[in-house]
Length: 66
Image 1 (tube, rainbow, N blue to C red):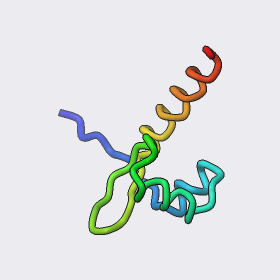
Image 2: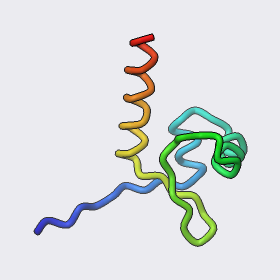
Image 3: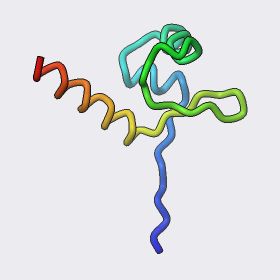
């Protein structure tokens, strides 16, 4: 069985990747008003890079279809 490795980003790294201010991303996550895939572990937000890419692709495809 092959072990799957996840590339996890911190809040700061994810905000930079999404081209957002980290405070804006934090507020969105804490408010629950976003579907950006993230998990909170030990009081810190973490983001799986693969999940973020799937999320962005889904948003792009949805936008193109409207």
